[in-house]
Image (cartoon, rainbow, N blue to C red; front, side):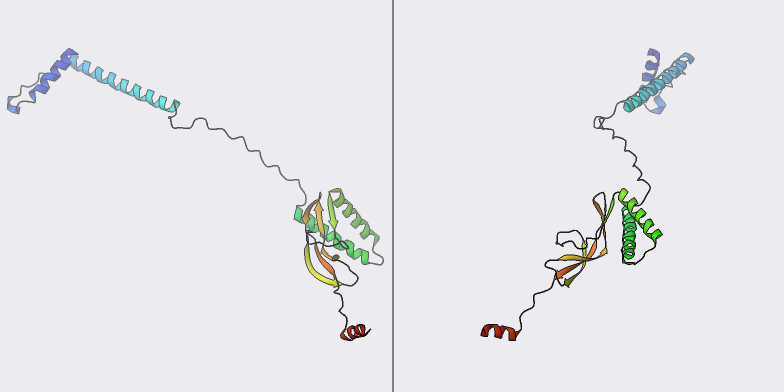
Length: 205
C-alpha cells in the first residue's frame, strides 16, 4: 500500500510543472494494479454493506416524530339484519286497511261470516305481534295530544272538545307510535246571545 500512495503523490506533483517539463510516470507493476483492483472491490463491498445496514435500521426503527402507539380500533361488528317481515310504515298501512274494513263491516246488517272470521284472525295476529290500533273516537281532546287534527267542528251537546271522527287511526307497536292518528275534533257550540226583545222584556220586569 505504501508504494501505491507514494506513486500517487509523485504523479500529482508533476501537475505543478508545465507539460513540457513533466516527467512521465512509470508504468505501474502488475502486482500494484491487482492490489488497487482488490482495494476498490473491497471498498465498494463495504459501502454496499453499510448502505444495506442503514436501510434495514431505518425500516426497523421508526422515526422519532412517528406515532408508534396508535390504538388499533376494535373490529366493527357486522350489522344485524332485520328480521324478515313488514317495516313500520307497511305495518301501519296494513293495520289501517284492517281498521277501515272493520269499520265497514260494523255498518253492515248481516256481514259474511267468512269475512268476519278472516278479519278477526288478522286482528288477532296483529295483537299477538304487539300492534295496537286506536281510533280515539269519544276521547277528550287536548292540544298536547300527538295527533293530526283535520278540522274542528261545532257539535251540539258537547261541553268540551272531543274527538268525534277518525280519518286515520293511530297505530302503535309495543307502545311506540308508528302512525299518528288523523281526527276531527268536535267543539261546544257557542252560547246564543239573547235577542233585543228578550233583553228589553227582561229589563221591564
